[in-house]
Amino acid sequence: MSGPRYPAIPPEELTPAQRIFYDEMQEKIRSGLGSSFVVQGPRGELLGPLSIMMYTPEYSTHTMRLNKEVLALPALEPAVTEVAILAVQGHYTGSFGGFLTYSHSRIAARKGLLTEEQMKMITRGEMPPDLGEKERVSFDLAMRLVKGGEPLEQDLWERANATLGKDQTLHVIQLVAYYSLHGVTLNAGIIGAPEGEQIWSS
Image (tube, rainbow, N blue to C red; front, side, top):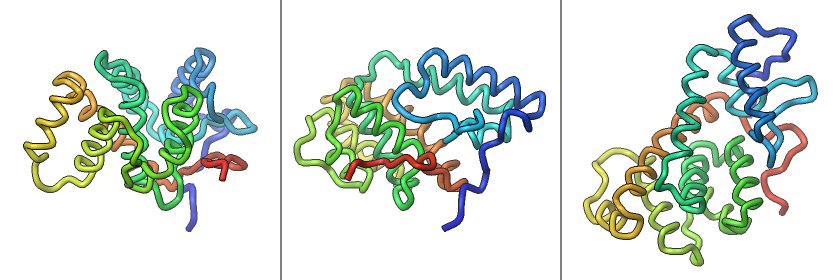
């Protein structure tokens, strides 16, 4: 398998529009983005979804603004969030271990939200038997929504509302939609973990 199809662009090769986006991301990095994972290469190039975003910087500024807003949705609980993100990324990039599987596995581990074995199962599309009920519903919602086709089943929607609450159910749906955008682009670009980095310890 070849890849990545959209190589990270070194800072010295950026266009003026790309430089604006690059500088915006540098500010986010100084504010904590990538504190748990590698988000820049040895020449300062941006990695992961940011590397493909560099090719359309005007659009990508809005994408990153949406990223901040989606992750700040008030009803989202941390473990519910990470289960949904990992399920989505496993669906789109599981065959090669996409960058967001790498980065969010680091985030979930640092926060003590999920074990490595749980995360491995989630990204394989398998329900870990020891997940809490809210996390189980988050997994089911994410896996069903990325499948598409027929409308979301009424019984699953009702179970989600009963377990997560109406606000968090809607926010998980919005989270899945947003991270599907990244899943599709990482899949097409074949953008995995940074060179020298492993997603799992074993």
